Image (cartoon, rainbow, N blue to C red; front, side, top):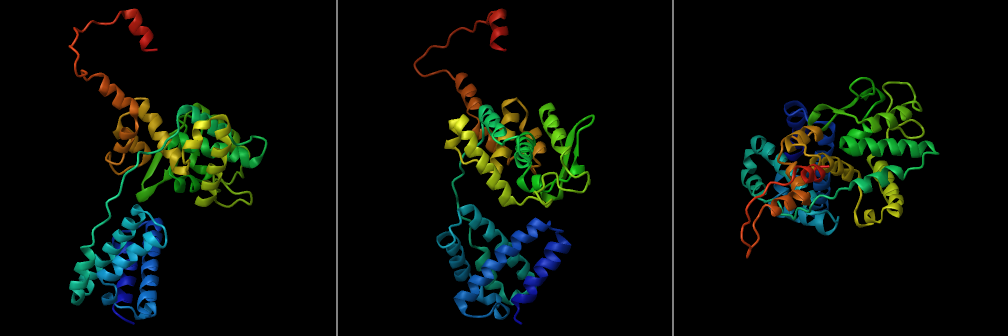
Length: 329
């Protein structure tokens, strides 16, 4: 066994599990990235994984691996950068455990992330939200489950992993109705529910197994829905909703679109971005700023305050109180 194997083992058991107490999702993401890198190095060097050394994973091989992700696997810049972040984390850990490979490690750590274009977030308008929620047929068990899932996702903005991880005991429909979830970064948060969501969820709970530890949105046999299953049901109902609301055809509706739509609904209602960050479970308000870029109404209001070129500033005249009342309706 070479020097790479104990470093890799220590990275997962000591660094991630003991020191950082990483969540299972984080460990799985790091594991997948390392598995891909080791398999690529095996194919390139002809050595079995147990015989690979840190010296084999030099900057040239890591660079070729990153190109392989984009060219052969079809990954985008975001996925490439995420894999590179894992490699950087592994090599920072290796720098303290294998100082004899300092030159190789420093060269790998010098590989920069790929700059990428940041697209404006896609979200659903109120009309599109109504069409999507109405798409699942209420005559079937699956239709009623999907309607409850879509409505809860659109109102709370939960991540797909948070939706699929909900248990029956996580939703409370009495005084102060809310849903609790164990979210990203092992943060627990509670999100209040609207009257419409409470009504739909109360009807749905009546059909579920009374076991409080059972999944809130189960499969027909009673298991937990997978991420792929949620993606498929969202795409299916979006295609159905497009018949009633054609504008949906222009959008790629995914489970994360439900989260974006919840954030934009709050933003358009005048909710501060710091509150939206708490609502969505963001670490800070920086991530929430993307919704400001997507909201054209905020930019239009700013434009309306700017004096247009070639015009003379007019004297301000307060609006008639009756017209002001009508304008604010």
